[in-house]
Amino acid sequence: MTDSAFAVVRAGALTTVQDLGRAGHAHLGVPRSGALDEPALRLANRLVGNPEGAAALETTLTGCAVRLRRAATVAVTGAPCPITVDGRPAAWGAPVRVPAGALVEAGAATHGVRAYVAFDGGVEAEQVLGSRSTDVLSGLGPAPLADGAVLRLGAPYGPAPAVDAAPCPGPPRELVLPVVLGPRQDWFTPRALRTLATGGFRVSAASNRIGLRTEGPALERARDGELPSEGMVLGALQVPPDGRPVLFLADHPTTGGYPVVGVVPESHLPAAAQAVPGTALRFAPRHVR
Image (cartoon, rainbow, N blue to C red; front, side):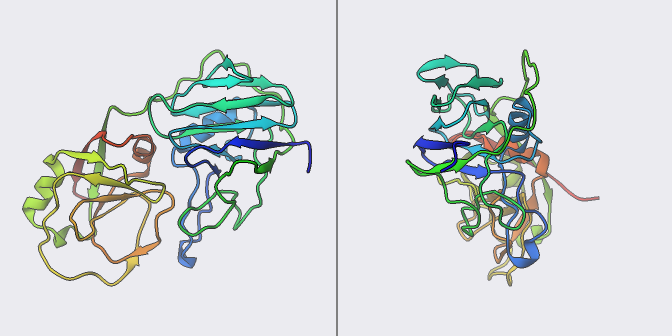
């Protein structure tokens, strides 16, 4: 095995390889996938001198630990968490030079859900349809990390920039998501649309990379039955039979038969990706003009 690699010592709850995803294949039934908090991935890559779309690790809640087989510059962004190198504290949100053989650990998130661990040169997992991203729904891309796995690193692109501070938004204490109503808002009663705007929702612990599930009041249907399966877009707010909206994230299915009451603009999805279970959630519906 090449020395330009790292070994997984602690995989954490769910750690996957992610880049900017495999856009343009929905007609084949392939979701885009990619980092759920895309700005955090882009920042981590900039901090280590990579192109913004290089592959990195996306951790979930409990972080991960890896042992480097070559010296590398490492940066961790996204959900704030303690960083250590061979047990000694290191900077979060900044480039850290790590010697070969050292153990780098991103600990449990102190706020938020997902951290991004970037290495100079990027993670060189095998590309599938032009992306190295793990898709947990379809199984495309590299498998989620497991203890003992070894992943290759690419050649560094150049020196990391000199950075004093790299501001980035913190995880939300309350999640407020605008919703462009449609295409199936007529499947819901006026009372349901008022409930969507005023109901006290919370983020469910059943949320994952496929979708953010909600707890709270059910949206009342105006008609019975189900739709024929139709295309689903990133950010679609689908309402299953229990009436509680599900916000589709990067690994969402490309078709579905439950009505979509509206769509959350993509720019608001990174905040949704960092909302821990129990986070208060408000929707702000608006009509298309």
